[in-house]
Length: 340
Image 1: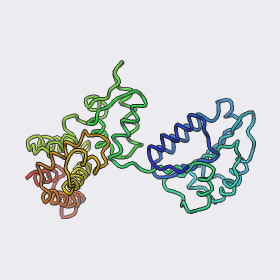
Image 2 (image 1 turned 180 degrees about the vertical axis):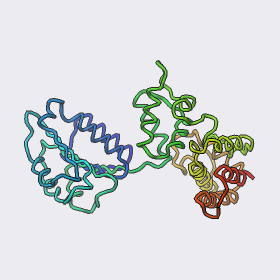
Image 3 (image 1 turned 45 degrees about the vertical axis):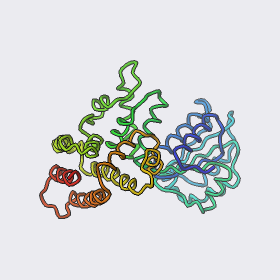
């Protein structure tokens, strides 16, 4: 079973919950969150607490002996249907490919979990091919930023908590696609919900995460799309007074993403809601209106100039052809150029 998307993460998780185990799991990739979640789930599901005393072993790649891992995997469980062996940080395991000796003929009563983080094993190698034949290969990829709002909604939905699209986008703009930073913020919001309340709002985020519900990149983008110069300048003034909470590099990234998508919309044969959603791979129609409005308020040539300006101002922000202009003044100049 080969898996590489968030949907296959959910499929795999459901199989584990239903105790449909495989003899070998190879979890690899750059996003540690999904690897850790699946490993923890196996640790919680395969054995009872009593069975773990004799039937669960954890190895760490940096100091583990691959031969000892193999010999341990070939043992029979004691007073249990399974034994569980977890190899963490397997990317640091010397002679990693020797595990292929075991993968060719695994014990049906052993569940071997291999965590290979911050990289991948070449799928052309024999060990990967043999694991795929008998077990699970799961590649945990970093999510793109446009995948983070649905991830937020899904993560909260499993806990019976709702969140609107604007609030999910606010969190995305604040954290980006770093799930290790996102999850603590979601957990903080979960415990901050008033008793009986199961919906996260922008006001709750403002109180507990520190993102202003009125002065943030989401609202700045809205003002720019609508060509609301007064509102845009108010937000820029707020950003200038709070530079640590509102770094310009994050603002450029958010606006660059919008205008890059907007430019793609200009070349669509039809510029209706469904065509835009399909072209931009949007799961919700919530943000389609922003692109419809952008098509009305900006011309394609202007959008290309704006995208070029993003690159120039990103370089100036990093010190290229800029000795003394502050971040606030740079942002103010950039927003002026976008809107005029």
